[in-house]
Structures are given as C-alpha cells and as structure tokens.
Image (cartoon, rainbow, N blue to C red):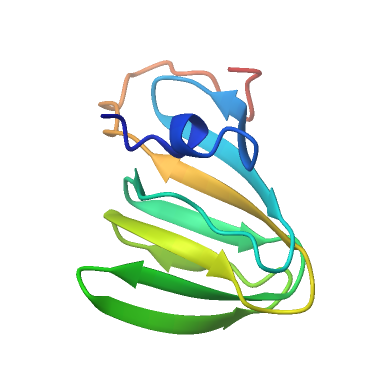
Length: 113
C-alpha cells in the first residue's frame, strides 16, 4: 500500500515540480478535512496561508498553528492530519531527495528542471 500523499489524498496534494533532487507538492484543504495515513521524506514546508492542524502518528497527537510564510523543517515521517482551524490550509511541501555530487562546470543560477 502506497503512503505517497499524492496517492492517498490525490484531491488534496498535487505535484507542481519534480526532478531527480526535489519534489514540490501543493497542499490545500478546508476546515474539518482529514488526510489518510501518508509519508514524507525530509521536507521544508512553507505555509501559504495561516492555519491550524492536528497531526497524529504512533498513538501521539500534536496540534500546530502555522503562520503564513514561515518555513518549517519536517523530518521524514508518516502521519495523518486534520484541519482543526477555521481557515483553509494552503502550503508547499518541498520534499528532498538524495543530494547529487558536485560537478565541475555545473550550470549557474536557476534551471527549468
């Protein structure tokens, strides 16, 4: 059974960018919505709106309040979540993949992939 959030909750997560180093997911939900059990590798989460969530795993629960624009580190984990606030959740999840080795002569600046 897949724990990829784009499979477990395809209506809430969508891939907006992916290459061999990173995958960026956009997440949106409404108050009261819940996610199924899913996992993320090491991730930087950037809330695009302020919202409140309850995250559950291994018999534990935490409630978090996230402020718009405040990046958060999320260590690799599997969990389920619920929007417990009165506003919609909107966030980017920048999932990290294994780092590539430095290559002499690599392109400088941003690239499209």
